[in-house]
Length: 455
Image (cartoon, rainbow, N blue to C red):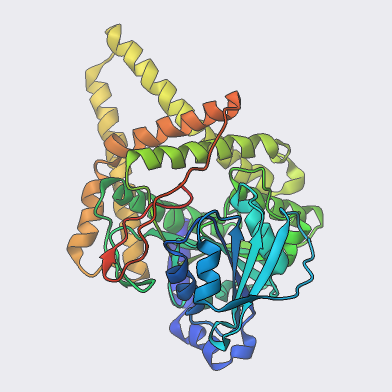
């Protein structure tokens, strides 16, 4: 926590508005960025989403929408609204993906930055990402989702660590926030507010802990375990050299991050993976228990699959920090934590039924654990204040703190149960469906209430 706080302050004073404006004043210094966003049955939001991406404030970028075999009118809307026409294109499969049918460009110069790739459905986001990586023309690409909203200046912010580092930066992570509760107009957030529903509100605090506390600390020692698939910058050549995204993985972002690190270590190349707290991506959190269950079950499956697939890295000195920091952290603090918590709860029930509990000690331990969790949440909110007040008033921050007091009772037990369910599903090889999500779209001057595509 001390390292993360120091790193946050370092960013605050190191990357100022002057550095960001430098890219505007000297656009030739800005590396080109390809934004890759897979889309499957996204007819409700696709128009606003693409418009939002095309209007980002950055000198040189392209937007690649990968239509992953949509069965609705996603492709038809793209063709009609953005005046697309099929272009002759030699498609080189640098990394594997399902067959690509067509590549489109716009006849309208206003949409000259847009490419649309139409391909057969690959069943996972990873396959669609590979199709976009194959088409991308720039050295760096963004991995994101069409239901995410990016801050207008987010590309200018996320590229700064690449330009500033004395080592080869192979990936940069951004900060994910909940769009639930925010006011949106034409794909832009006009007013930032904390979520109104309970589960997204808990997840907002959880995300702040993950991105502003945990990952900022890991960034200090160059040991970030995962660059989020919601929004992250990747070196295209390193991704291709590492084999691209694994279409069989349920945790394709973590899998890709670790394989990039392994590639750099195996080829004895210096590298850095950086967390950028100022680069913001707004995503929709699960609005109810049913969707949270689906999301965390999938994450649990992905976690166990990841550990089994990459067990060779565990405590392997040839892989440096990956072997002795990242993998032990994932195994002991991410994977085993739900198992230990659930086992401890069962043991506590046994002690209660057999009258072996010293209640004075019991309540003292409960209070201690509760206060530690609450203190971490309060400190997390203070990080957000250090970076710059996104919420407009004190009461909105107080809302986060007050409801975080109930997180350990109402939210965390659900996360533990759903994660364990994911472990069991993976071990029993039960069929897993990604599911179809309801969309309401980014309507003008309405709060975001749609369901996240990655749930």
